[in-house]
Image (cartoon, rainbow, N blue to C red; front, side, top):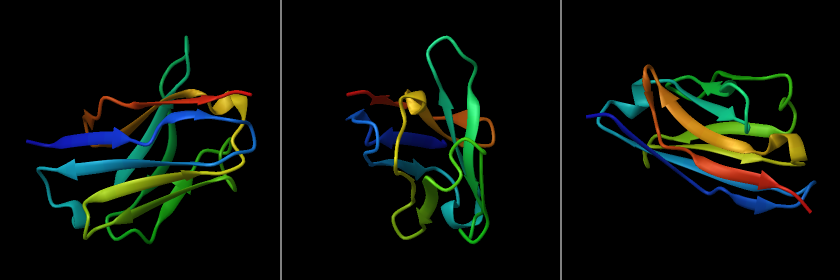
Length: 112
């Protein structure tokens, strides 16, 4: 059974940093790409970043390019989202995803 458990969310001030983690189980982690999505209050879920199974290929939404970095540690079955220079518009619930499975999400609030 595929499971994805996000953590690391919280309250951060504009311009600050936060690192999200997603612990995965139930599939061959090193052979699978993963995605981070986010859903802001009252808005639809949007793709933030993707990473290939080997971790060498990444893509980003234009809104986070240059500020966020996705990475994965295949030894720990964990994918990360490093968020730097955060903005109030980054406030959202962040979800980890593989194929049709999503975690329950972790809440990020950017506010002073």
